Length: 300
Image (cartoon, rainbow, N blue to C red; front, side, top):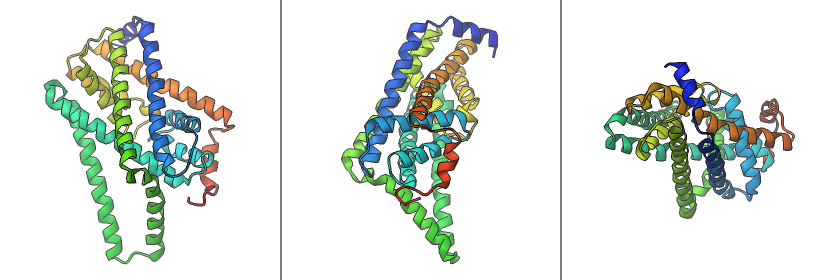
């Protein structure tokens, strides 16, 4: 990729559309926070502003920590601040990830069938679904094997206890109304993300259809599930540029659009998370200390 061409495309981008994209990112964060609020409310009554703060702290931590360890930091902070068992809080975050993965992978696979040039992106969705299925089957096989081999009682009890506490985060799934809300909010959040990317792409002179923008944004969202550097730096750009080149986009504007959307979707929530940490008197090193203190609800 010609870095000079990328720089020129970024400098030539109109600032007004980028500001609109930033505003949409904040709307998307608010919607995702409301989805998490629905999940948490099934466990314990919580204040929506505190949920927004904890979510943004998780985004900030993900921008600093590799392999999405910010999700664990979010569970720790939220468990303490909202007085919900940390493992149950982690369970709600896992449900978020599953909902995102299912909706986005379905969209990418479906669009890949409609757009021949997007078959490569479709493979990312298929790989994610297959990987999740294999991981689930592996965990089930390990559980069965442990039972047949008469594993130590303490190991079985510990595994059962941990699994039970995490599964407590899925109480919202017992309500059809909450399930519909979670799925609906997930779809709305993804639709807003597609609009964000479409605005950024056109700001750098990249003409894409709405369906093509959905394919690119879906692939970018799925790329964040790959164990990677802090903020998915590198893998995010690689996946996005690869899909855009398959769609016939010029390398310079394509790379510029991916870099800009990465900054736009990462920086505002991370800054909000940093401000939330400051107001809650938290420090980055406190994530580790909190993980060593007893759970406020006595559940890990």
